[in-house]
Length: 371
Image (cartoon, rainbow, N blue to C red; front, side, top):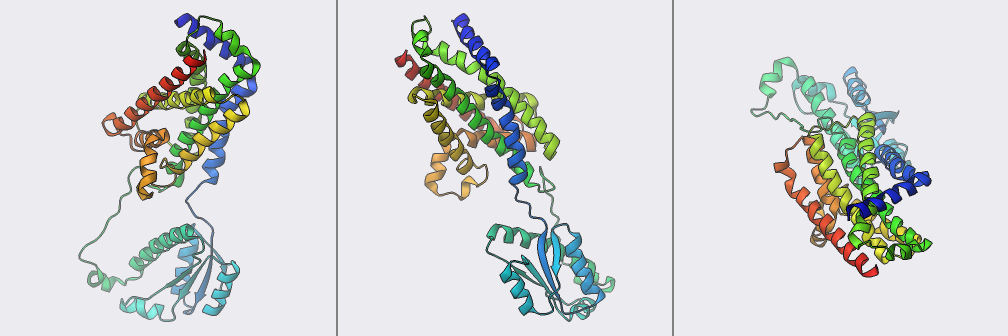
């Protein structure tokens, strides 16, 4: 059995050697997609076009404007003299945000009384507006602490102070949140497509008939088909992690051994699903479309890659339990970002084991009938 399985694996490796484009696609495409999506997908907002209406015209008001400019988030584009001019800038899209500094800013700061800085936002892009609001609140809070005169600090100090500490991603970099999800998305799509096309290619060329005349059983054929692509996909996953560390500074805080084991389980499930698709499709075009639709859309939409599962409708939350990327992305974030031990993410790994067993078993049963 092992000899026959290895013979199929060697045959598939020879095909990859004769067709370097396939091997290059399996290795190169994940890295290219990681670079494209890693830089393109970002929740960080920078160079926000800001217009400032300075009704005070004092040194203090200029310090406020400078604080927004030096934060790295805002770019000053205009100095309208009235709120009506600011409204026109927002209507035209020249500015995304407007800051109105009141005339009594200096007097309020000297007396310790609150002075209201008005921030006007373009809410047509709700997510960007929410992010900008968070940035401005941080800047204003820092300014408020600096503007309280020393003689009033004890009196103005609140009886309770809040200290915020961000764990696992202290810079709140969206790349560190997105890259693990990107790896799950890319590895699933490439692994499913690879094996789906490999078996269908045998059908199109008629070589599947020759395989039927051999003593091969379905499990030997499927394992032989899966093994080469598992090795290539594992190398691709390792190269993608190195690229993520190089480009985005994503370091693995947990065990590399456990990371490798979880990744192999995930790839086994993806390759098994590709084999399952190949038992239904009779052409590479159909196999490619089925592989792309069944792997890409669920991984993006209902795996927790971008959108939190807890905020989805109940029906989609239930459906997400059959999406393997849900468990891989959760385990990957635990291992890579948190350095968590297996006691934290073992249930995600167990779900990947169950998924791999189910899809490989189903693909073997269907292939057995065709052979």
